[in-house]
Each structure stands twice: as C-alpha cells, then as structure tokens.
Length: 557
Ligand SMILES: [Zn+2]
Ligand SMILES: [Zn+2]
Image (cartoon, rainbow, N blue to C red; front, side):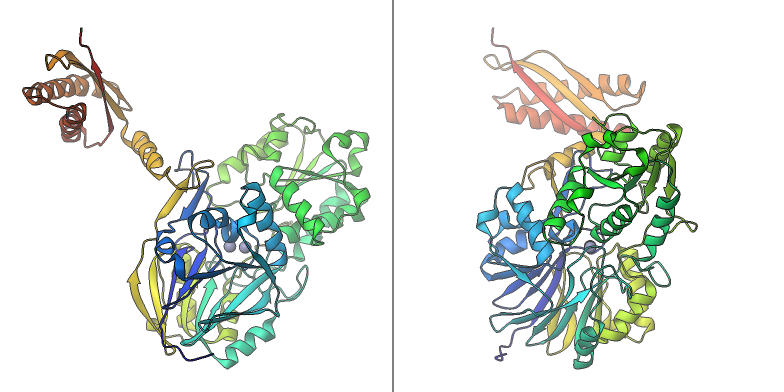
C-alpha cells in the first residue's frame, strides 16, 4: 500500500447502546467505507413506528468520500437499513456474501430501487482494495445464518478487525469458523478489535447449534399429531435442521408466515436450505394428510399478534387451526419484554388441546447465535488486539465485554466503550478518542423513507405522556375582535383536574388574545399567543407540557 498519511476515523452510526441498526464507518481524508447497514425494530414505546434507522446526515455531508458498503451477513440488523441508506447517499458498490446478496436484491426489488445499486458477491478468499486507503479481507464465522463473515480492514495506520455476528461453534450446521485465519491475523498484529457483545452477560460457551437437533428429534419421535415449529425466519441454520428432522420422520412440511416464506424461498433457491420438492406442501393441502404426517414451520415465536402462530391460535388463519393433539415447539428464547405476549399465546394454545414445548433444561430447543463469555475470551486471545472496542450490544453488554478485555490484559485506556457517534482515531498504530458526530435515532413510519415521521412520533409521545389541549377561538378579522370567549377542550387529564384547569386556561387565553388584538395581528401571532399563555399556565398548575392546538375561526358576518 502506498504511504498516505491520514488518520483513520472509526465510528458507529448504529449498533452501540442497542442491539440493532449496526452501521460502522471507517474514514480517511479521502475515503469512507461502511461495514453493515442495519435497522432496529422499534420498542413498544414508539407507537406507529415500523423501523428505526441511523441518522445518515454525516454520510450525506461526506457523500463524495463514500466508496463502498461491506456486509458481514444477511440479518436485518445488518442489511435492513440498505434501502434507506441508498436513498440518502450514493453507494458505488455493496460487497456482500452470496446469501446476504440474494436477500439484499430481494429487499431492493421490494423497495423498487434495485437498478441503482451494484452488488458484488464476496467469500472468504476475497480481497478488496479501496484506493490506497483500505484493503478489506474476510474470514468465515459461525452464526445462525449461513455465509457469515468477520472483516479485516488493513489501513496505512494499522489493522482493524470487525467481528460481525458470530459464535464459536465447533460442530456447526454448515462450514467451520476459520479460526486459523483469524489466529494468523492476530499473530501478524491487530491494532483494533471490534467484537460482538450480545451475550457478554452469559458465562460459559453458547451451546452448538447442532445440540438443538436432538431435542427437536425427541419431540418429533413422540408427537402423536401434527408438529408445529415456530422460530425466527432469520435463523436459517435452525430451519434447515427442523426440515431435516421432519423429512426423516416422513412428515410433509408447510411453511407459514410472509418472512418465513421469503427467507426459505431464497435460501432454497441458493441451496442453503435443502427441502425435497415432494416434501413441501401448501397450507390448503394440509388437510389431505394424516395429522402425524404434517410439520408446520411458522413465524410468531415471540407472540407477535400478526404472525402466523398467533393467527392460528386465535382462529384467524384461513386454513390452519389448532386441533387437540398438536405439538407446538417454540424453537426460540423470549426476547426480553415479550414474556407476557408469549405467555398469553401459550395459554391460548394449551386451552385448545395443544402440547406446548418451550426451550428449557429438559428440552434444548434453542441456541443463541452469539458468543458467550468464554467465546469472547477466545476471540480476544486469537485476535490479540492492542486496542479493543466492544460493539453490537446495549450499554451494559459493551461494558461487561470491555471488562473481559481488561481481565485478559488489555489496558483500561486501550478499551473503548463508545456511543453511536463517538469517534476513535487510529494513527500510526495508536488509537485515541476523537470528536462526536450526529447519530440519533431516525423513526420510519410505513413507507416514509426520509425519516420525516420523527416529528410525528415526537407528537405522539407528547400526546401519550402529557395529553392535548385544543383552544377554539372565533374572531372577526374585520373588526379585529374576539367574537365569543375561547373554548378549551382537554384530553388526557384526570377527571376533576380538567374542569378547573380548563376554566382557568380559558381565562388566560382570553386575556392574552384581547391584549394582543388591541393592534392588527396575523393568525400566526394569535396562535403563538394562545400557545404561550395556555402552556405556561398549565405547566405552572400541573407540571405537564401537553400539546396545545389552537384553532382559529374567522367570522366576518
Ligand atoms: Zn446476525
Ligand atoms: Zn446482529
């Protein structure tokens, strides 16, 4: 690589302090590359939000420098932001593993923006030079989706490894983790390691994905009727295992749920999930077979109301209903916060005569795709970095992961627990903290790709927490007078509280309007006056900041 002296800025637009919207950036004076462009699915406190994406304004302001986007694997928290990203800035090329590339193409077709993007498939032998600034290479990892990679970025200032999502599975479904390749990179010298922190709270090793198989097999062996397996559509290795068990047990497989159908369809097309054509049936054919000849594979393991399993349980599915003797396998663990939803779903299924099997010590029906603490230690030993930045996790996970690094001898001041938007600077093999760039959440409502709904979400938050006050005013713009005293409506106030507050808000509004209308005023000025007078009074009385909506009517007759 030709010598070009330019420090490398390293920062995340998403992925730190959260599990989701992973977007990591590497920038020199003249080039910028990204690793992953994910979305986050909104928490329950964001009413009406479909996706959360990063603020791309820094990229917009530096658009001329953007050279490429590299993708580690095909999960939504790594590729889901791509349609939004490429509408914000021009990405000359996306380098992605084969399966991720197929999923991205499908996603872009859905968003009708496929033609604008060049996608190049990579594998573990690929080496990509971005001018003289970056040389990017890959090593294969094990995770819950095939074709997952870690990324090695060589720069003139030093070497960075970004782990992608991984677990160190020694008996994986599919190809092995390229441990020796990682170890070689570590021996040559790694300046900065950025690594997955999702399971930093869990001691030990994450069980192998193939462990799940015997638990699933045992249930299939004993199930008297249909077996309905619910898991994440993103867990392609799991789906492959369940399918193999079903075929061995001579059961026909019916796939339900939009995301499951899409992912299984693409994965079959590319050979990542193998189901004999004769083994797959559509939902309306299920009734043509004996119950003991059926396996239904569906979405909804988190109790999501609109997913296939909930619709089946509620009797809302057009063809499939629960019949006594069904065995339901939840091949998943509850995501924190979903417990109550899942409990309700399980009760509903049991009430209808189903036998529900969840992951437990007795039945190993799920294994995480992320590394537990021993694997994190192993990763740190293999990469042997001089500096360490935990990524992909909520704050406490990043913090614990940093402590693991320190316990293995990485000095405290070589360990960086960062927020989205914090920058690190790599210069001559030394990493220091840099400045801050904007990296707030941007909320996406439906098909609004511009993130304009952030303001609307903010309004909904106010409505939910502080209520709303509407002030109806009738004026005569010819005579510049108030025709009748203002009428105030309030929503979201406690009974009793409201009558008193409303009466006084009315008086304050009227007083303020009469005063300002002594001179010629615009509607805008009247509205501002009402807002100020009413909100000031209500805040003083109730310590709340409701949304104030002034409505002005002009009665000139
Ligand atoms: Zn992943
Ligand atoms: Zn991830």
